[in-house]
Length: 369
Image 1: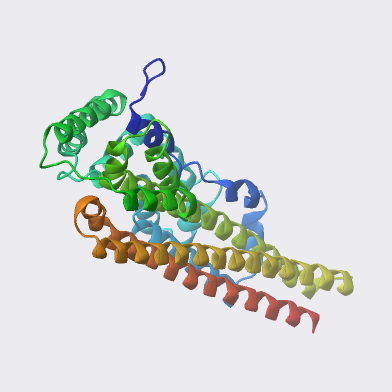
Image 2: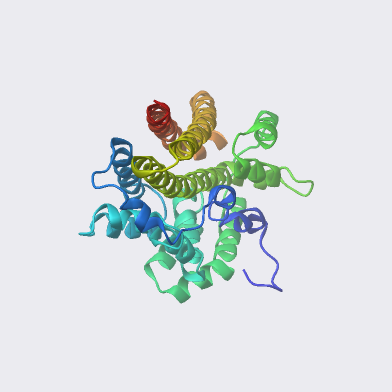
């Protein structure tokens, strides 16, 4: 889709949100902390790592492993595996999570044109079923098996051309034509106003725009709904991954400072000042952990809302298994299961940060004496 060429009706809502998840990095802007030149010295401040540092290092490794085994883009997954397989252990994990490290490099690679094109083709192939969009599905599959140039051509014009062929076939073949009734249109209107997913709402709004026809509503059920849901899930996963990478790198830095401050108590000539600095350092760790815990509780709530929403859609799809609803039925259970897993992961991660908060408070109390 290049400048100067009008986008097709389907592309106008789908293409602008291709990188929605990739651009959802607001947490990074808020939470990122610059690397410090004295970090290695801080880390080496004591001979034996305290339990909180060991727990934080293990949690960082566990988080990278989750990314490697997740449904995140391949650039992140493959890079995470390289860090996990490094012979340098926790040092390699810390470097991967650090500003400008492997995770950030993978995020940059995702935004390269050839990788954006591949992601678009994969999303189209996964959300446009062959039964409803045979031309689009086949064209996307061919592009995926082809070269970078093939995928670029599909994004530029192939997708729109295949959409036109599919719509023409549906309009010409009475056996493919589905009646759009008031109940269906009313349901799409509710989705456009209240669905928890931003991109699903956008897709529904496009299907109901002033110039829309019954064919647009039919296409929403056929692929627009699934495509919007895919974008929402991807955005959620990417934002969570990016935010957690920042939190872990910040946690390691804060713990290092706190451990060094506590160690400095042993030889300090001004015990009161050193104790106050150590207390403040552990308080910073606790504050960071508590903020992370609250953020994950919010993520848990958002994922729960999505899972509940897809459960309702599953019920509606079963009650009206024919007509337009049959096109969305196949992806309903997948979406419900995906959001349920996101909810469980958020709950587990919130528990970890609560443990970090408790450990930091114990350390602060220990310093107080």
